Structures are given as structure tokens and as C-alpha cells.
Image 1: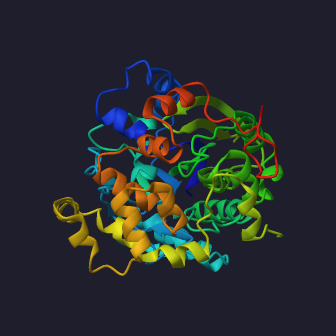
Image 2 (image 1 turned 90 degrees about the vertical axis):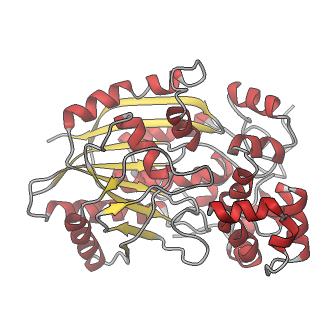
Length: 280
Length: 133
């Protein structure tokens, strides 16, 4: 049977991808940030997952205002890299896992989560920056990737509770898949940041660190946090943090925190990062 | 679960919630920005901005805000930052450079504010909260 062995939370700031792609990772501005991922790069090499189930949001790349799916599950064999206005990032193509993805789609829909099935989808920095942070710059990505794109751009995004429960349904789906695959779930986006308007640049490290504490040890305290609390306390784009609850829901109730990192700033954003393992 | 009404978000200073009303208002403005995802469209827009905008269904106010690169006005008229940032990218502007413009700062001032830990939440939670001294 397939199983979920661990979860990773990380911000997915586009400037991080640009820094890597343009050879700036060793500059003083970026060095502390990439240093925070050194442990995680060694860790994922050791864990060697077969599949990464990667929860992220599309930033008006694959989707526009024409179609706004709340939960869009990538079931394709391949996911091309999006051109976000600067040309596609020079990263390897993202290879999917259609058999497991379709199995998760069927299982979660029958569990009453109304997933959108996507067979043709470009992926943007929301998906590729987390891969770059964990894997660096390989010639091919070492794992297959199943993208789950969550709407957090058009209000309202799904609630934290819905995300957490979807995580549990994803776990159930993975654990009923017959092949012995090792799966790591990524929850990406956040932490505090606001990209728009006169309040842009907002950072709330107190909120962020409390969120990190609770995500590890007390996720029940976060699942009922209303959207307005994210937006008011941590900035309009901090609402992305609901996606971390999908990852957390897919793990055991009690997890082992094997790595934690927090850094301000990456461009406009507070970067948070957790590596969590199931105990068994 | 009980969620706050959209209107409650209006109390948050300097922040625009991209809700149903703004999405309807900004559909054509945002889809214009979306068209700039294609290199040939970026070239055509750069070659003659007014001619590119002319046949589009945007309001005159939206077209004017685009031509003047009034980034906050675009948000007020239904623009969303993930769309307007594509116009920014067409101009060669990063998210941070756009943010500096929307906050009325120079790029240097804004970058320094971020290096110093970002904009404080104190005094920035609520329009009814007095500014932080």
C-alpha cells in the first residue's frame, strides 16, 4: 500500500526562484534563506519519496477569471512550466503520476469533496519554487509530482476546516492505493505578506510563529481561524496559509517536527518552513 | 461555520478584498492583463498601448489607469494584484518594485523597510485603530 511518510510546509516566493535561476543564491541577501533549507535538501534525499503531492495556488497562470476551481487536481502525465511574464523558469519538466492522481480524485470525490480533474495544466512558481528549495537544481526532478491547485486569489478561498478535512481524505485515498509508494505532502504559500495596496509589505512574525507552533502541535486551534483573521493579522496574501492545513490534515494527529525555519524577508514575504514526519 | 461578511474586510486599512463585486467589475481589466502572458501580445501592447486597449471592453477609467500605470487605482477598479503584476512584468517590474509604487515609497525605501522586518502590524489592523506612534 502507498503511504504518506512526511509533510513539508514552505513559502513559494517567486523571487526565490529568480534568485536561483539567475545565480544569486550565494549573495548576502539570499544566503541566509537558502541556508535554512540545507537540512531539508539532505533530508529529502534520504527520505527519497516516489511521489510529492504538492498543494499550491495558481497565480493567474493556468487559470484565469474564466474558470476558478476551488480544488484542481492535476491528473496529467506532464505539467509544462508556465511563462509568468518573464519566460518559463529554466527548471526540469514536472512529471505527474496519473494512476495515483486519478485514484485520489475518485476516492476524494466519493468522500464528498468535489474535486476538479485537470488533464492539461501549466504550473507556475507556486509549484516550482518549493521543488527548487528542496531539490536545488537537478537535471530531472527526483520524484513524480501530483499538483493540487487551490483557489486563494478569488474570495472566498476554502475554509481552513475544509482544507484540513480534505487532507484527511487525501490520506485515506493514498493509503488505499495498492502500489507501495512513499508520498510526501507539501503545503505551500504564506507566511505573512501583502503584495497589494498601501499596506503592502506587512509582516507579522508573532502571528507567523504562533501559526508554526499550532500547525505542529495543535492544528485544531487553526482549523476554525476565519479568513479575516489571516488577512487582517498577516496580510491579504497570507490567506495562502489555509493550504498548509491540507498538508497537516494528511499527517498523523501527532507528528515529529524534524526541521523548522523562519526568515524575513524574501522580497515582500516572511518565509516559513517546516519538515514534519509521521511517527510510524 | 460563521464567516465574516465581505464588508468587515473594508475595515482593514490599505487593503482591497478581491470579492465577487470586484471580480465582476474587474473581469475585462484582469483578462487584459492575462493577455500579456503571451510574448506576442506583450510586443503588440508595447508597440501601441492605446491601440491595444481600444477594442477591449474595459471602462474608460480602467484604460486610463492602465495607461497612467496607477496601480492602486487599478485595484480600486476591480484589478487583482496577480493580474496587474503581469502588466508590471511587461514593464520589467518585479512584485517588490510594484509594491514600492503602491505604497508611495521609492524602491530603496521599500526594500529597506522589508530588510528591517517589514511593515509593522501595530497601527495597521483596523481603520478605527489610531496610528501607531
